[in-house]
Picture (cartoon, rainbow, N blue to C red):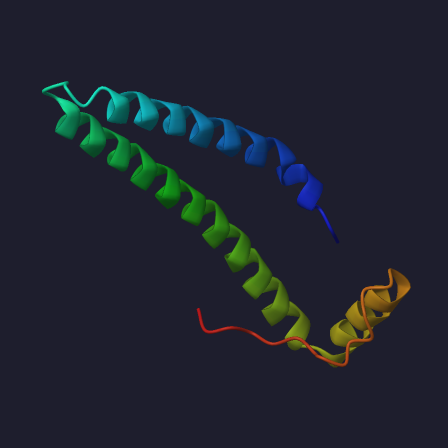
Length: 104
């Protein structure tokens, strides 16, 4: 059930965007004689804010899918039993911790 490698491209893209933002900030900081420096900082802050909000949207979608999956599994003992058998087959643990839903 590990599909984290599918996120590698997204993480690389985010890293490149943050690197670009870092170089942009360094340019504006070193050119402190610019009269529009304050505008540039506000713009950079806005871009960073948008990036964070988009990242949280992606995480929210994933968390909703996990919550829905846990609800689906929790409805039936046979589903839970089958799930724990799959976990054991892939070596993911013994299931002693159980499945717990967080507070959404």
